[in-house]
Amino acid sequence: MAGEEVSKEVMDKVFEAIEVAKTSGKIKKGTNECTKALEKGTAKLVAIAKDVTPPEIVMHLPLIGKEKNIPVIEVSSKEELGASAGIDLGTSSVAITEEGEAKKLIKEVSQELKK
Image (tube, rainbow, N blue to C red; front, top):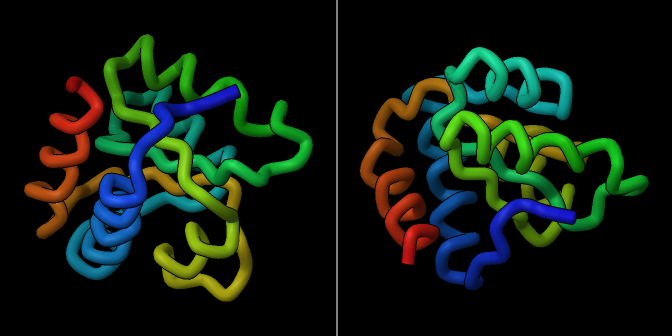
């Protein structure tokens, strides 16, 4: 499947970026919202949970991300992703649409992916 495979360090930065953007910018939660943000080109970064079943639910996100040149990153679990987005449930994907104070973190993650 998937978005970019990344190290634990980069994954932590992604979670941190989501948490920061949640309070100082804007995030979209769930596959439908992330798809719209990617298609409109408003997403700055998208995180997809590795444990989504069936994986077909999020399979199209990395393709749209690649097309629009938006980083799509695979993270460990729906629970961790939901927690970083400030919800009690797991979520399949989260898109940061306005970075707020997470701009630097997103830039660092993007640079890691280019290596």
